[in-house]
Image (cartoon, rainbow, N blue to C red; front, side):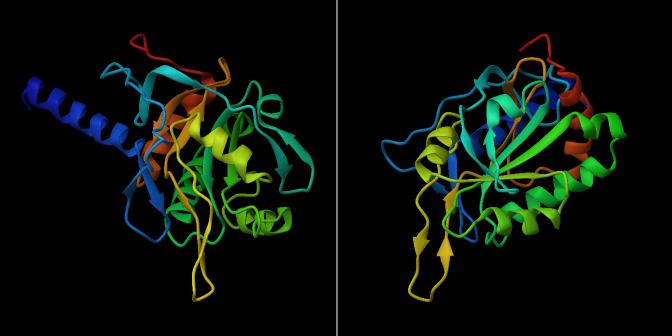
Length: 229
């Protein structure tokens, strides 16, 4: 294949991944632009030199200063309790019919392919965007269906919205419908933080295949960064 064609295709794929960080998804609905006045933070990619299948950023995100309650009913300080670990952070809710369970399932399958040393250095943290219904007990039972190592966080929604916005992810208040259902609109991106910097260096869009996560998990655990970043 022509090297220039390869470069163009890679650039196009990276551009699509970055575009996903600028959208808002309501689980079960089509993607829609973020609300006016709530534009997410801008991001830029590290380029073709990146070893990752996800989109590596040359301007990483700071890990949010988020203090909530975990799925065991205990206080959880995201920065303190995940320091020195590779962290895959995702925002969503347990009643989500599509994006949330699909993403968590794909990551769980990828984790099962990893050696124990990678699993021990990796934390998957799911932050509820529907804390009124997602109690610690509900989160614990739901997350265990994917992987028992997952950590669920629930609590003040304003804190959650602020933390998500700092990563370029928009979270809106849950909407109650006439038929009794509730939908929670949230960005579908997953952000990976390196253990060496405690910063978010890689972003994964909705629909990232299991193979991509499986490829990247060992690199994340080692805190790998490209020279272009």
